[in-house]
Length: 221
Image 1 (spheres, rainbow, N blue to C red):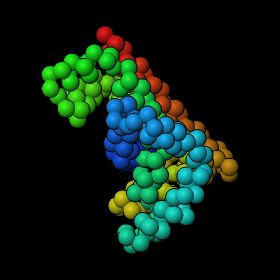
Image 2: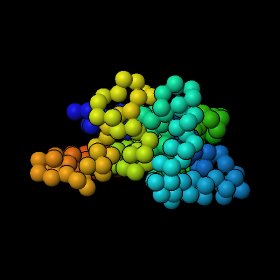
Image 3: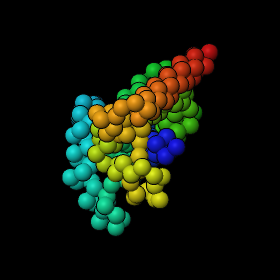
Image 4: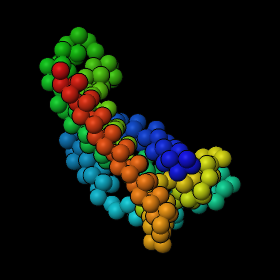
């Protein structure tokens, strides 16, 4: 349905934007940044995780939406705006877990790479990232779970049109936003349908948790 498709469009778009930013941040904190710079950047990233989602939604409506509206010629509500907001929201989760994965790599692996004449960038790209890939994949999956379950910020910026979007700047529906909007007045079959939507979200969350455990088990062998 349009609701399921809309949820996945918003989630995958946010992952496409947020994952490179988050992994890049993790690499910077774990391998590149000086202790002083790390002491500045890490608290800033952690602060993003503590901001309520309604504040992100307010930022999206007041600041981001007018900018998107100006260059797209639309109202500014839609998938693109939701992508940006959700990408910012999932960066702390993916970055923190990816940094932990990079820091868990034994120092001897780095030293062996440098001893063979590899540069820092070559070591990061060809040695450390492949060695930490299981942890990074886990981080991305958990970030996906955060994105698909997000409600308030998405509700405020996505537009909530009950049809499939005609473009990235067009409004679209999501499961979480629809549940929040309709639950207060729904009755009978309508309410049952909302519980069905919630069951879909719950099942998908369980699938993501199972995927993380399976990948972690494979990586530990």
